[in-house]
Image 1 (cartoon, one colour):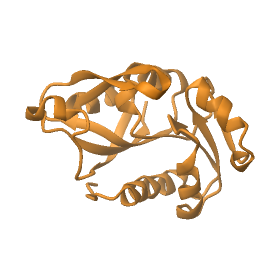
Image 2 (cartoon, one colour):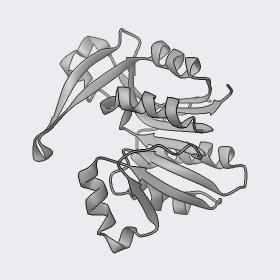
Image 3 (cartoon, one colour):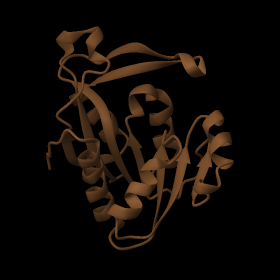
Image 4 (cartoon, one colour):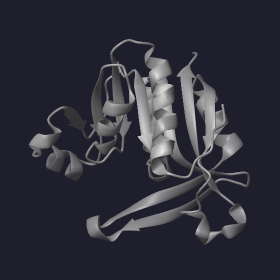
Length: 193
């Protein structure tokens, strides 16, 4: 499946479509990798017909702040993801900053399904740059993946890509190398091994 869209909401609808299919009418645990304060949870509460628990895996500073917000009580937060009962691992735009930790988490937790949005890909070679968050005094690696290479990485971990969509927008990191012609993609995967 390849879908196109430019609005953030339509991109989330593509993710919701796959989550609904993967849930197959049963209650599920959705883990949002890098989900900040869990705002996508509220979108999915409206978009999905299935019941789900929502867990956000974030940096310790955000986890501490989120746990103090009573309006977020229905969302669980953690700074380290070790559990192996995740039904759907979801991420919206975070993989580009968490390349190695994300793949290590997939290997460790082996979620049944993975749904990703905002993965910057190119047909050229994978390239790495820095993204600096001055407010938090953090530097993050920023990865623009070769599309075939990232698909191969997931396949080597035992996942089959059943959905791939082009967001029709991009170039957040590619402005550093405009020849890369990167664009954002979304992925839906199921574990087959």
